[in-house]
Image (cartoon, rainbow, N blue to C red; front, top):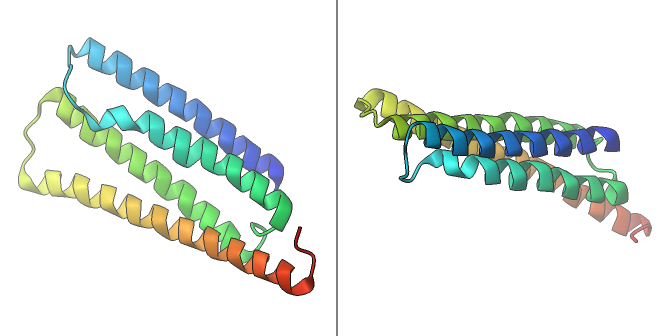
Length: 147
């Protein structure tokens, strides 16, 4: 995986974080809503789990070259997909909260279930990335090229 791609992902998630924060502020203002909503954390999810995470991966990749492995590549793909699933479900749940809609049991459970799958997938991607990193670090230590 190229450093350029990791830098692009960080930039994309920074832009998504800014858009999410702007949307949250303007949408709640337009709806005259002042309570708690899950939309309020979309901004921070994209900044921390998106932009900062990929900036850290960029630094680690420069030292250990672990994202070029099959496990590393799959981990990054899974992580990206499920980070977005998670944030989309924050948006869906937040819009329901702001709209004051009382959902039936089925749709309410579906939103929670998909959000849960998003978090599970995010965790799976993170585990794959960390296992790939661990293997690369161990390989460097064995070969004596650790920095």
